[in-house]
Amino acid sequence: MNSPGSLCFLGRTVCLTMTLGWAFSTDLHKVQARCNDTITLPCSLTENTSDYRYAVWYKLNFTRLEGIVRKSRNGPIQPYDYRREARLGDSEALVLPWVQPEDSGEYQCMLGADIGKQNQFLNILLNVSECVATSAPTFAPVIMATNSNCVFDGSYMELSPARILSGFSVLGLVKAMLCLLSIWVFLKFKKTHSM
Ligand SMILES: *[C@@H]1O[C@H](CO)[C@@H](O)[C@H](O)[C@H]1NC(C)=O
Ligand SMILES: *[C@@H]1O[C@H](CO)[C@@H](O)[C@H](O)[C@H]1NC(C)=O
Ligand SMILES: *[C@@H]1O[C@H](CO)[C@@H](O)[C@H](O)[C@H]1NC(C)=O
Ligand SMILES: *[C@@H]1O[C@H](CO)[C@@H](O)[C@H](O)[C@H]1NC(C)=O
Image (cartoon, rainbow, N blue to C red; front, side):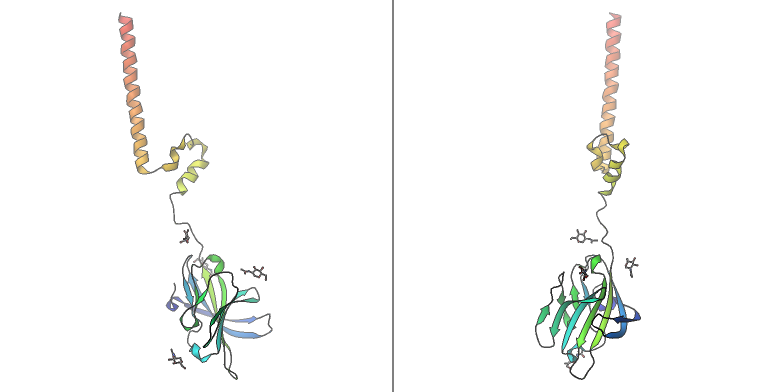
């Protein structure tokens, strides 16, 4: 999910009116990512970004553009005070490590043009899937614990096959001992009465 090749070109044309007062029309590219992926959002799909004076990445928060990182063509990378780690990759691509569902939303890369040329914008809609727990074993005890009939001791906490087998063998042992005990009682009873 972290290569430009995984981009879905389901672009739809959007017109967003920014609080700054300017409007633009461009394609909205969709990127699907999984929880914890490290993703790379390309700044430009076709243009040669070195033709531009600077590149700025924004995240759209309702109608407000929050700066993430800025880079001049031959200058240093200037990170904004963005709420999560972000860095610039090759060709001014935005690299977001360990994406979370809250990173979903619309991102914009703006390429600031030389004097007399037009700035370019690329909008990307990022969708990060929910972080579903991968550790299944904690599931069974929770269900058992809510069923009061099953709570007779702590053994339900570890219902592994080995545990179940040993549980059966303990039960078998108890049964065998009860059997021997009843035979012993019977014999003893018989003995005292025959005396
Ligand atoms: C982009 O432009 C620069 C200089 O204008 C050139 O050196 C470079 O090879 C170009 N890159 C691509 C991928 O076209
Ligand atoms: C979006 O903006 C609002 C107000 O401007 C702010 O309170 C909120 O924290 C922002 N959301 C994110 C995810 O940064
Ligand atoms: C985001 O991804 C999830 C999980 O793959 C999917 O169910 C959901 O429809 C997607 N949302 C959008 C807006 O594409
Ligand atoms: C995401 O990473 C965290 C921390 O390493 C981990 O606890 C969690 O299970 C991971 N989630 C997924 C869905 O991979």
